[in-house]
Length: 160
Image 1 (cartoon, one colour):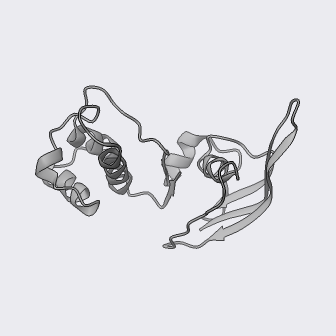
Image 2 (cartoon, helix red, strand yellow):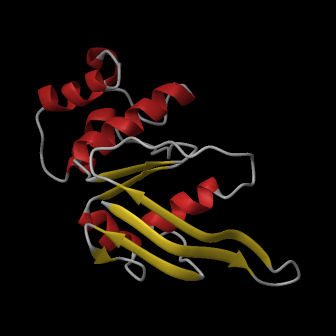
């Protein structure tokens, strides 16, 4: 379970702008939640705070009952929090199978990597040996990125 308690985030300087103010949110395990709103409304900032890319100005973040507010992005990933960027990351010289294997954290078979691709609607034989940075559309890259998150077996997946 993820719980945010009075989470705030602001930028200082000339603007002193509050981007998030007193956000309270509870997400139970095995739930699919979509947060919608206008451009500039703080959705990406909230996602980045949950995964640890940004730190809240104030408030508390609990994951499975543990306070992760000050925890690094690496430690949050180890705790089971995964993140997919708005624009999928491109890797030069790495195949789709190698990327999924890297995400899984252990040596997986080609058949297992193909299963992950199939789960996101890709015909594995068309993608498994392709280079991630070559001739893939944005939609294909996003599906491959989602397959890597599935391979990681995260407890919480955050999609920006």
